[in-house]
Image (tube, rainbow, N blue to C red; front, side, top):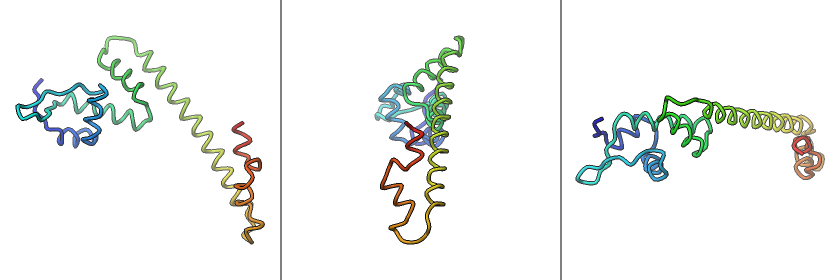
Length: 143
């Protein structure tokens, strides 16, 4: 496969910033590309696809170790996808937990705001709940 695409074009094509491309090379997510006689990195379309895969994985919240595993699976397409399924299911469960936590947080903030009498600070429900963590239903549900 012919190399020859400059890092700026790779950045544009993949949506990954240049410093991030270099970082991914340092940590091994992207193989070190060949260099010109002048020392400039040169890439090919396969690198752009790999960087797009990494970017999309990061957007979905996968961590670097998970992405390394997913890339290793992608590099060997003849093997079972069971490991990819395990990683995706774990991420899905994590997202579900965060959604539940954010939903509870939303309900608590709504309760605080709706409970406010819009009078003086001395009777403000928002200030009262923030000052006494035990009055926070979100805190009670988390324990």
